[in-house]
Image (tube, rainbow, N blue to C red; front, side, top):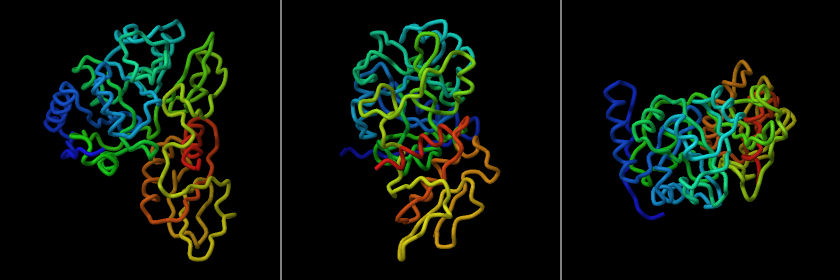
Length: 330
């Protein structure tokens, strides 16, 4: 990746700043550029999903393999039948969870370019609930492809500064919408018969989805992904990461620098040089929102190993453990 551009972070805290940031983002998107935008899950690297050249820039910027499909974010409900084949179950899911952090994998129409779906016959679609993202995609009135705004396989960004660390010099604009609400990527489901397969765990939990149809199974990792975010090694810090049930059982070798990502332990053993807690009150929602930020902090602390404590695999815990397992996969 050779071309260097000046990367600007556009604040959007006041109405004036926000209007200015949105118009800059729209001008760049209309010109076929990629821009980083806040969503309710993590920051996304957005481009016009119907433009081959613009989508190719996403893959180049992220250094993402072309066989890993992208999520398409729709401007509004009327776009769903234009890009995919829907069903009664899909209508129920979109009525209850859209706009929001649920992505649905559906048979695609010819409107969506092959590059977006990595040549698959399905397309992953969602509608973002983030006020800035949804205003931009509505004004553009074209779907946006927007995977996480980081280099491929690395920790997803939950703040504008994280995007800058990852992609400065590669993209022209980052719209700063503050810290993201959920902190982990959207749940992905594939409807099947009278139920669904969870392709990736996320903020919409298995328990919530089960009210609308049988959960046939939760898909595992895949070397040839059928949906975005299924590769076994993903969301990973540069520092090796070990998953443990109890950090107190870990012995730190002499001269080694270990850090702890705590869940259940009251504290890390004294010989750990850094520690972060996912949630002081053991709240899974707060833990999910903090996950990528604290991983990034530990990754920057010059450690030899990060020891992450397991969280209970209920509700949002399933999404957190999914990300930690991938981060530990080496």
